Structure formats: structure tokens, C-alpha cells
Image 1 (cartoon, helix red, strand yellow):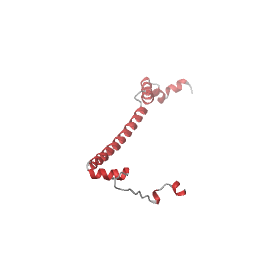
Image 2: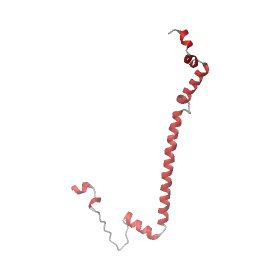
Image 3: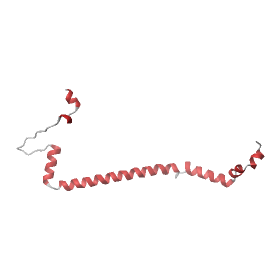
Image 4: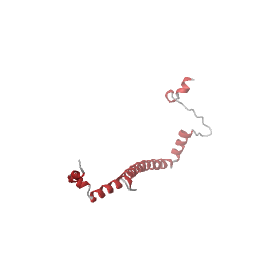
Length: 111
């Protein structure tokens, strides 16, 4: 195909138009190379989504901790928690820890 025949094609005339070329270059620049490109925006949007999920998680944790703090204001609850969690005891008491077979490690079962 000769150059003159190519120039006569409609699609070639549209693509060789200087405004079309500038528009194509602009779009390529904005999508791939610019600091505000599509890919950077996509990555930032994913980061925002992850941060919002973390925010919700921490709000739930704060609510749980506030409930726990309210519960611990009662001295009986503090004593119960200390006995269960840290095996604390009064002076004249003995503590017996009962472990069920299914709560033991497999290593201990084999020994």
C-alpha cells in the first residue's frame, strides 16, 4: 500500500489529526505516568479500604475493653478474674488445677 493510499483512509485521517494524537498522548500519560495515575489511585483506594476495616476492628476492640473495664470496677469481679487468669489465692487456700485429657498437648500424652 502506498503512502497516498494510506492517507486517503478515514481511520488514518482521524488518528493522524493533531488533536487526536494529543488526546491519546494525554490519556496515556494520565493512566500510566502521572503522579495521580489510575494505578496509584487504585492502590490508594485499597489502602483506604484496609484502613477502614482496621478502624472498625479497633472500634470493636475498644468497645470490648470498655465493657471489661466496667465489669472490673466491681471488686468481686476483679477477684474472680485474678483467681481464674493468674491463679491467685488467699493465704489459707489451696488451688487445684484440673486439666482435661483433651486440653493436654499431644507431646505430653506420648511421654
